[in-house]
Length: 405
Image (cartoon, rainbow, N blue to C red; front, side, top):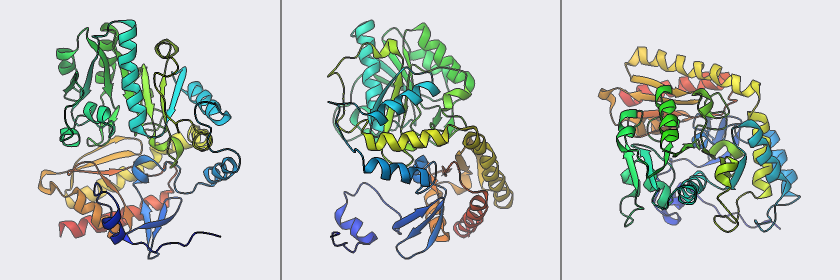
């Protein structure tokens, strides 16, 4: 017999959930493709993708099938045992990237935590225990564990929790001279997002990424790429590093890896992985068969010419609609990003209105994101229907007009 379903509303949130979020006024209950319905049956077009997570839309038939099949087979074994889905997924990620070794976890923060620990451990084992400096960037976001939030370049997220991990230095993003000024033989890693997501959808320049690679080589430091948000086809390539002609030493990915099911991965080389041994790092749920079976299916679909080449065509539809809106309303100072990670920066006269626009958009039936108070962010499904883009942008335009009025 099914458990009795408790009647809950948005008001329930304010009574029972830790007050660290301010969710929208409506409660989504059902999704299909790029459409979502709330408790009242109102329909929304989803341009948020669960913050770049639902890369194949909601309830993609192949992912649903993988969930059902694996759900009736084997859910969890712990890491006392391995399992077939994890081994298949790792093999496919290695075949598709620079990597030779994979570590699975459950969230982007956990993948980054593993990456930062590995970078320091490797430097300590191969070079010196004093080679521990991590260089990261202002406005970066790497997760919410204490280590990752400290490496992230937004003090508002790391302040107030006591003494922070030491030997982390922040410099301006896309500023190679600033990196040169602080890098030295004590540096173990440079940690960077190829496209800063939370920091305003800012892509790294090719010169910057190639310069970081060269500096890492010169100082025997590791280049750690956080592709939690930019990975898994979001940029129009499987991973954004492929746009830059550089190879990382460590790469992390999460968000879209499971298409909505929680899973993350850290990828690295044999040489770096060889410093680790049983017991040095771990996670109970990481690499569980259920998550890995779904992620394998998502990877098989995303890593195809059809899906990856379709990303750029869809981007052009968004950009064209945004430019039309800008021509009418003098709204944006910049439309940036790569692929279907799009940032539309508001002009100074509209400063601070990103959240107002997000709320107005929800009222008009379209789900969007912001990245700070000045940037509207779009991270829709990679396979969103062009008709959904057109209809959603009509709704978005209506919302913007209301806010400006």
